[in-house]
Amino acid sequence: MQRKPLAWLTPGLVLILAACSSGGSSGAASTAASQPAASAASSEPSTSAAAGSAQLLVWADNSANTAKAIKPLCEKWAADNGVTCTVQNFNGPGELKDAVLKANKSGNVPDIFEGPHDQIGLFVQDGALAPIDLGDNTSKFAKAALAGVSANGNTYGVPWALENIALLTNKSLAPNCPATLDEAVTNAKSLIADGKATKGLGIAMQIGEKGDAYHWYPMFSSDGGYAFAQNSDGTYNPDDMGVGKDGSIAAGKRLATLVDGGILKGSVSYDIARETFGKGKSPYFITGPWQIPEQSKALGDNLVVCPIPPWQGGKAATPFIGVRTFMQTAKAKNSALAATFLQDAVMTTDFMDGMFAVDPRPPAWLESFDKAAADPVIKGFGEYGQSGIPTPSIAQMGAVWNDLGLAEYKIANGADAGDTMTKAEDSINKTNANIQ
Picture 1 (cartoon, rainbow, N blue to C red):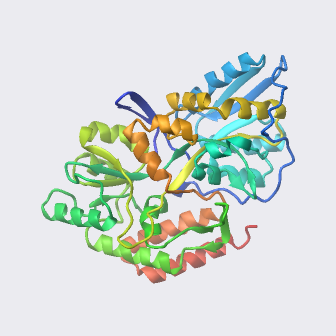
Picture 2: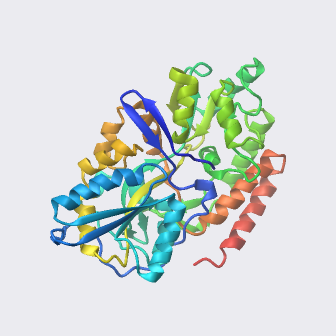
Picture 3: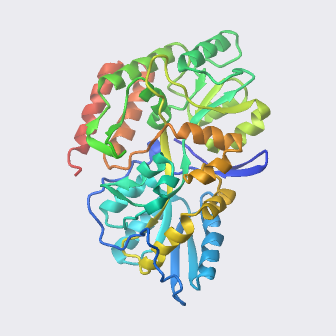
């Protein structure tokens, strides 16, 4: 999957959205296996903020405008409380993740860092995170965001933004958001027959030689496929993996039908999908908000953000959600100061609004999302995202990304769906056999 930080202009807002986790290409994180012994942010704020020379060290990813958003907010809070805030920039969540893991071994950690939720399992297993008590603020967050930062019965971050894919639609080819995927397919077939859409791109969706389980997942889930079953608290059960089960096979057979019908094509890459949609030769494009700048320029008022609908009679077409999160390190040198910052500053509407103003992804803080949803792009992605599930952060997800993606590619190129999914299941179980 490919995501790029880009800027776009929409009425009343300049939007700069970027990727959180890298979905199918990220591998995934590890299962939360240990309880870190560290101070946690609690619902009773510490009074140690006014510590004179105390310094709060924050690490942040600035591949988008995240660090730029955090810096003035943290510095203002620090100045108001007689302390110092230093924000150190990193070039992307991967670089920051590696730095945190290395620092946890040396002890030279930041007090707080910001990153995608699907790394939480790895950090908890490494003993790098302190649990956080959201207290009375729990109800002020989107439920999907809370599920994303939960592991082993604990909360390991303060979520501030959500990100997911949706169905970009060209109104000149599809005047209304489709009620079902069947409706979208029927419309696409008609457009292809009339020469108005490109065969294999009736719905522009990247697959490529490694497949792309992240972009396929809404279609996959509507046919009953799933990666891992969720527990009642929203966490994932690594012992209940869905690849190879009936729903995944049904989704594979559907994929083969879509390829045979000229709706999808195994060789379609991210670049082919975006270029074809932008040239007005595909009515639909399954992608994320990082494509809004390019497609707004290409299609203008004909561009609309729609939810990905279900198959007729099927289950919901569920997207994976990335949750951007503030996390507190287990070995923070100023743990009480970090806890106070999270409680008194981050978990406020002013702070969340300030983050959105500079790095405007759909807010996880409900009051801020209600304001941000005045923009139709934020509203479209955010409302569809509320029906989604957090990208699994357990270690076992890495094999699913790999093998489910490869299965998708093979089926799209003629392999038998049942046999391919069964072999993918065996490969995933073999890879995950030694993960605790």
